[in-house]
Amino acid sequence: MFSPVTPGLPVSAHSVLDVVPQLAGQSAAAALRETVEVAQAADDLGYRRFWVAEHHGVRGIGSAAPAVLAAVLAARTDRIRLGSGAVMLANHQPLVIAEEFAALAAAYPSRIDLGVGKAPVAAAPTTAAALGKTDVGWDAFPQRLDELCGFLRDGLPGRAPVGDVRLALAGLPPPVFVLAGSPHEAQVAAVRGLPVFLAHHTTSQTTLAAASAYRDSFQATGPTGKQYLAVTVGLVAADSDEEAVIRLAEYVRIKLRLNAAGSRATTAELMELLAPPLTTRERHKAERLLDDPGHIVGSRATVASELASLAADTGADEIMLVPLAYDGLIRSAILRTAAAGLTRSVRSVARSAPHFVATA
Image 1 (cartoon, rainbow, N blue to C red):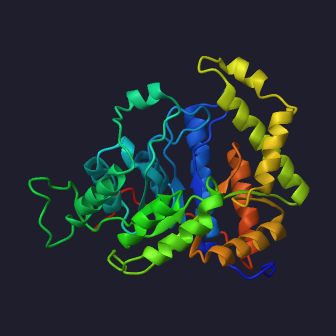
Image 2 (cartoon, helix red, strand yellow):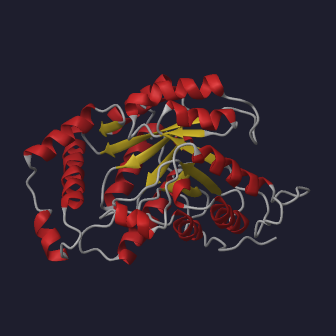
Image 3 (cartoon, rainbow, N blue to C red):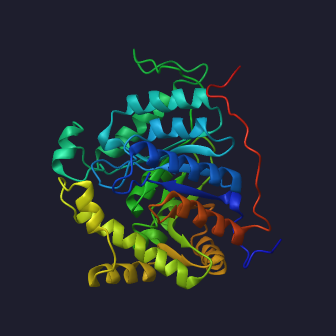
């Protein structure tokens, strides 16, 4: 038993964002199994939600289908909320997303979230073309967001469908969140009364401005009528500050080399490519992340202190942790270390066999 190092948000006000990392030579099944185990660890530790991002055509990242992954994770966890962080509306028709997440919400009542974002996520033009993406600019995002929310709301009892369009498996809709990387995007959420997650781990330089824009522009027209602001943060937590820095360096080494590898590189070539030591470029990248306020790297005490400072500086209602590691065991260890600094004890709850589909 131990006390928090510094006052701040409890574990239940923290959540997790994952991208289903896949190492060279690792099967898709093994990568997915590791992510399931990380989600189970987050569930047992008392984290609020576990989201998966949407990325296409990025070597080493397996989170291309957030709705499918949320279904897999929901079937193998008990309490934690599952969802997308975020589905990119430029890549999809709003009705399709509404139908997918309405089905998830019907199967797992009160456990599904729908996070949406603006930008298309594709590594190359060829991948974007394969997605069938058209040129959807910024101006189209608010319209698509309104369409999506409209389809979900029209599934509520007593509401008429949108024209002749009927939402399949309509019922109590999942909450919609906007993942914002700029003040303008935060305003889009604010004027609609929607909760916002600020992408602090990728756009830390605009976080405070985006938080101010959200609060200044908020209109109580959304489902709850209340502001809700969360921030994401990249995290490496370990037994000591020194060990955490070593883990960050390992993560940077693998990430940069996977990004630089040719699309036709074989598994054997990738394994050779990923061997240590760090290059000068990789060392400089790790040093930049250490200095970036969107990343927290350190021991249990360091992490607890910096998370508390982040919550105080931004006024966040929730902090979403992005564990920076390709190995599932290390990602789980990062979450355990963080939880140990945020609560008096790390709980371990016996796992039940969750229903795949809710019963009436």
